[in-house]
Image (cartoon, rainbow, N blue to C red; front, side, top):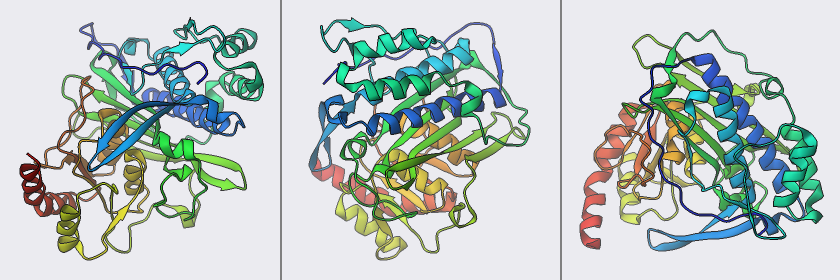
Length: 400
C-alpha cells in the first residue's frame, strides 16, 4: 500500500510544568474543528476509485472465538496526524500528549523512504508536493481533495457550533488526549451502504459504523472531561455523504459546565430520543451464555449486534439504544475516552464490566481487560453488572 507502514507507538509523558490554563470553549472548539476536518478527509479519501490501494493488513486480533483481521488505511494515519497537529497548534501545552491508536509512519510511494509529517505545510503548493510523495501520481483526485480540505480556515469548520457560554477552565499541562482517527476501519474499508436509515446499523461493514473519536482526560485523575464523536457517514443522498458531530464537556468541579451539542442540529424526527424499549447493543463475538443472562434480566431480544465501539457508544448518545455491553478485552482508551466524556455530560457513565467502577484513563495503551458497560441510566449499568458478572466470571474460569 502506498505511503503507509503501521507499527506501535509509546506513551507520552505527562507534563510537570506550571499550569497553562485553557478555557472550555477553546478546548471544545479545537476538538470540533479538528474532528470536522477529519470527517471531510474520511469522505474524500473513501470516495477515491483507488481507495483499495490505500489499505493494509495491520494485524490479526482474537475476538472471543473469532480471529479478526485488523486493517489500517492511509486515511487513518493522515487523519490522526492532522488532528494531532491541529490540537497542538491551538493548545501548544498539549505537545507530546495528543496520543493516537496508530503509529503515523509515512513512506514515499516511489522510493519507500520515510516521509516526515511532523509539520504539515500550510501553503498549498508545498502541501501538494508533500502529498504527492505519499500518494501515487494516479491518485491526483485524492491529493486535490485533501489540499482543498486542509487549506480551509478553522472558522469554516466551526459553522453551526452554537452553544451557551461555558465557564470552566482546565490546566493544559494536566490534560492528555486520545484520538481514534477511524474507529471501525473494517466498515470503512468494506464501504457498504446502510440498510437501516436512521436506525442502528446491524449489518457488518456498513459505512455509518465508522466514527472519528477525540477525547481529553485529566492526567492526574484519569477523568474524561471533553469529547467529540465525528460521524462522517451520517446521512447520504445517493453517493454524497454528510457528516455530523456530537460533542460534550463536563467540568472537574461541582457546578462547572455540563454541556453537549450536535452539529449540524438534527431535524425534529432525528433528534435524540429515549428508546421505546430496552435495547442493549453488543458485539457479535459476545459469549452466548452472557447474552442469555442479559436477556433473562432485560427481556428476550433485548440485545442487538452493532459494529464498532465508537458507533455503539454513539447509539447511546443519539438515544437509539439503552446500554452498551462488552465482556471482552477488545476496546482501548482511544475507543472510549471521547464518547465517555459526552456520556458523562449527559448524566451517564462508562464502567468496568467486571466490577462496575468508572473507567479511568492514562497514557497506557492497554485494552480494557474486563470489558465495558455504558449507559445514560446509572441504574441500568448496575442491573447489567449484576446480571452478567457471575456468568462472565464462570466463563473466564472455564477458559482457564
